Image (tube, rainbow, N blue to C red; front, top):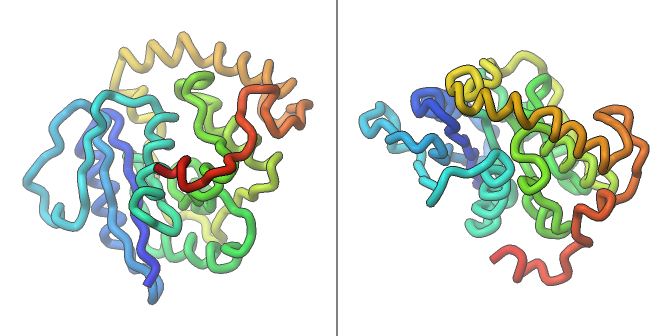
Length: 240
């Protein structure tokens, strides 16, 4: 039996995260798999305690409010600490339709022997997917919140991993999720203002590192122009 967890980072609205978790609960996984949802409540709001079916998922609270990059790294660390073969993630403003995770797992069966870092749901790669935390630990490459508090952090991570030989895949069947998109920015005027201030700065940092914007990069340095460490040597120490 292959057991894994799907982490749902709650950024602002706990109700959205619960809807996402309940949509995952309704997934029928292929034989030989079992999984549960785990909500990482980063909203600083109480999670409703009376929810039908809530016994089927766990809620964890970070000690302080985390950035997007820190949340992504926490997921990878949790998966390593819990001894999972891989972990899943969902945006809190997404819901998965029947067959979504079965589609992702079929792709995993095809590529699991390769150096894969993530498998996204077809058409929703940044929204729903599974991740190989071993890649993070082996390469000592994490989502870099020091450089990118929110936007461009995923692009920086993907490019660095790609240059080190790790593959990014998508599942095969489109239309298996719904996604509101940027729900935190739309609901939280303070976060919206912060994004207005930092987006172009993050864009400029990305360009300074990679010699161009997304899709026009000219730098192929696997150390990301000195911003990433070399691969880890003692994996057991890194995973602690």
